[in-house]
Image (tube, rainbow, N blue to C red):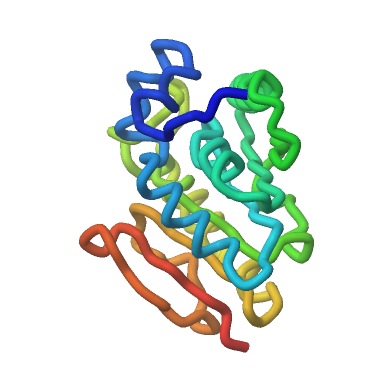
Length: 192
């Protein structure tokens, strides 16, 4: 198999033109995905859950760059199907996509989590992926609180990487390990 050089252009080429046009706003940049997946899989961590995986770009880059089990959960079935098709074409056995709401996932099955501000489209009309998605501040707050509870219930040592968000879903039981990209990329680890 030919070695894939992971650049934005090379990775985005796996997606239809329509998805490529959304990449800059909605999908994780390759450089960020490489940094995040490295932190999430250090020290024997081998089960990463991408919360709201969208097109699956973070998962794809992570699966290509490490041997850990990478799982993306996404509520939009069309994006799950696209992600599965790309993964199958690349024969990535350490990558899986689940069609579900991330709140319904069992976080105890994973030791690391990636979160690229999946709830922003509920409160920001510029970040809407679906034109028919209504803005809903109440739903946004409910999701943030539910995700915060799930993170708080994860075992000590669990890691989270957040990208482009206010980090309000991160409970006080986590410590900020480091921050990069002008505060957009944050690395967290659960203390207790």
